[in-house]
Image (cartoon, rainbow, N blue to C red; front, side):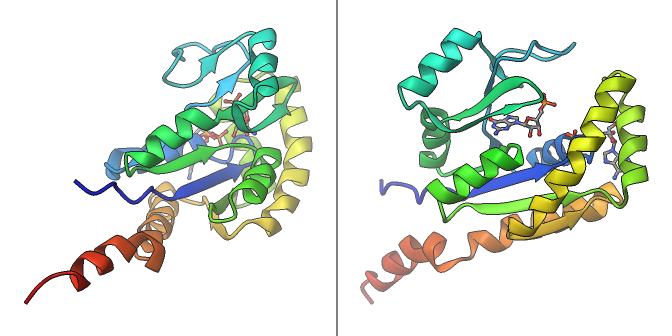
Length: 206
Ligand code: ADP
Ligand code: 5GP
């Protein structure tokens, strides 16, 4: 059997509270050939989060050992904790032919764009700052103080959206999901993704 064409890499970033996690989980439920890369983090698990599913929850020493041994494609300190994308995890998914979503912050996105220029970057925007604040409060996972700090941080992150390939505004979930799906589908039709098929077609005897 011929090796599969490695899947595309989609970087998806947004200010906290925009709806990125909600949108990514909707995408995963409709695209059987898309996987999300499970990051490593030193933050403590939230209620309901499972090791190996939402994150690999590791200690600071283990995370720093992985940095030292070059195990991360990218890593960053976000809100006081380390987060990183393991090189091995990403390659394993890509080599099985899956498109892989990296749900990472803007610092990580900049590192991936440098390391893998072929990666497609998408920034999700809230319709307004007031809606962003409402979503953060409505989620009910963060204290008032944490919400204030996330909102302050949001402006700087949103300024970085100008460096991304695609912008999606998350006003209502079905529209934003459809726009993200369109980007994912279109990237599968690029010449690079279709090259193996073209070669097989041209090698056919008739
Ligand atoms: P993020 O992963 O970007 O931090 P979440 O996916 O946790 O954001 O979403 C933040 C909150 O906003 C959640 O309570 C979610 O249900 C809600 N939310 C997400 N998208 C929308 C939307 N389009 N309209 C209304 N509420 C939304
Ligand atoms: P949370 O703690 O709310 O799950 O995530 C906080 C922030 O860290 C989010 O912006 C999320 O996208 C980002 N993040 C999650 N995993 C990674 C990662 O592997 N690398 C980087 N750079 N950011 C990450």
